[in-house]
Length: 277
Ligand SMILES: Nc1ncnc2c1ncn2[C@@H]1O[C@H](COP(=O)(O)OP(=O)(O)OP(=O)(O)O)[C@@H](O)[C@H]1O
Ligand SMILES: [Mg+2]
Image (cartoon, rainbow, N blue to C red; front, side):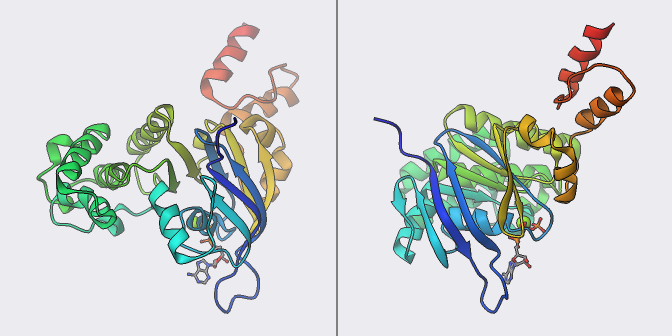
């Protein structure tokens, strides 16, 4: 028997109170357990709203969504969806709730009613996973932005979700902090967590398994990163860039140098250039 999908949405809509048009407008999306899915789109296109529908923070105003086979139609069902889907936001400062790191990481588990002995185990394991064990007794305000984001992720991991939505969770970090968080998400994915990665960084998008580009609340493009980024003109019209290496490949091709048009990363470009040499 095939495994249940992490997310199945059909005709999914969400309209904010008083808004003229829906922020999420008739979206069909299936996310398989274990996938690493990227969500792209210009500002205001509906990415965060879609994330909050998956995570059960919002209930659909139209269409349907099921999370791990369970339809989400009312508050009780949304609470169950929140148990299986964690969400990490953009600003780590807004996610800190306690005065020491350990308590902060425990907060979500406490809300779920996890017994305290088990919470201690889960918190220790989560802090170890994000490489922050030595900061367990530190005050969150003493940490750097990247460290705070790792603590926020530990809080989500401790709740043992099957899926984690990262909503631009690297956008306030420097390049090395960004890399750490992205690698952490890839590690969690390798250990079986489904990942929904919302980003404006095309280099991160290039490393996702599958991409959805959202525009005005609808899916405008979808496919593998190679499928999506070789459609350079459409991607631009949707307010996005293509990865630098894809742009460089196009420039080389227009100058008569025959590299593959679907190069996405520096590693792939290196292979192409070495092939020419
Ligand atoms: N709380 C809210 N109340 C009313 N309208 C909202 C609210 N949050 C978002 N919207 C509107 O819904 C639409 C989609 O917003 P959303 O935050 O989902 O976009 P986004 O793709 O995440 O944008 P960004 O890249 O800036 O984070 C926008 O038109 C936005 O103005
Ligand atoms: Mg957003």
